[in-house]
Image (tube, rainbow, N blue to C red; front, side, top):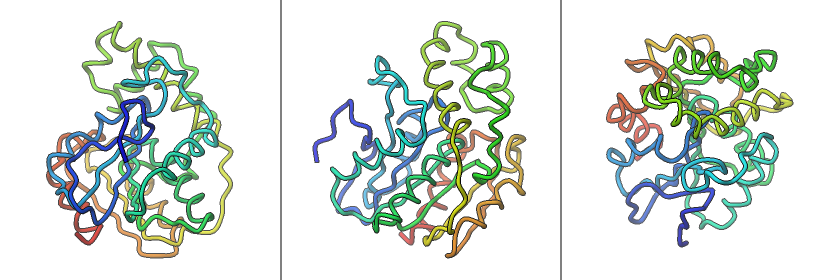
Length: 247
């Protein structure tokens, strides 16, 4: 299909006779740029795609989504426009919760992804709605994002630039903080979880929680670096992804 700039799903890597489509779900306030480092390390046999939700990048003028069900529905609707290349889902940080819910609903519809990959995120049961990060005053929100290494310092240190990202960041936190998570049957697909040794915001126990959410193979890998290892260790992460996707 032809990929438009305003599409919810955007191809971000070269592709040639793909064996799998890897759809990536960014962290709070993130977009396709989060996953650009992977485009330089994954081969054309991986159709690397990422979400570009309303309120960011070329869709910055659109109102961000703040509801999990609306967000998932938008993704699944757009996936229906793509061809039948086997689909794997990759969620980074809070994007993992959206990826997980999309995986659940696709499985219920008889179209299960071949694998769910989670980066730097605790399991869904760890969501603590009482934190209300999306309602924090701006200085407190910036402090939280800086301590967690969720948002680049170049954004946090520039008030005008942060103002451009802030609506999408708050909206994404609202998506999962207002999410009425309902436990259900484990996913009938393998789940791979990747964390970082120096990530102070997500520890080993948090990562291991995902084991309860699959009835198939579960893999947990720890890499060097902090919460932002997707960018700092992209080459090593790319090798790991290829192994997990059997490529």
